[in-house]
Amino acid sequence: MLYYQFINIQFLRSFMNRFFRIIVITTLVAVCSLSLLAQVDEVSDATGMPIAIGAPVIYGQVAIEGIPKGERRPSIFVSLLSGGSQLERRQADSRGYFFFMQNPRHGV
Figure (cartoon, rainbow, N blue to C red):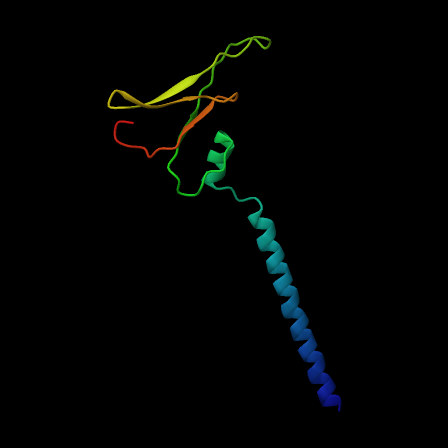
């Protein structure tokens, strides 16, 4: 009878040890993955739209310096040109970001 109790205690210790390790590893993975950022997040922040992974996008930001605080900001338009002809024209948002849902090509 004493031998069976010893085996049960060992089994419980082994089980609890494995269970504790699984909990610790799961917690670490969950905490570490919260701070991961992808390039898609950067594009989504810039455009203000959800962009699918692998979607073709050309984006950037225009900054105008020296405008007094109370003065109205000018409207900024960005044109996408290929071979001298305009493919698309977009207005930059209030932070100066613009985007085109196109693949970069030679000469664009």
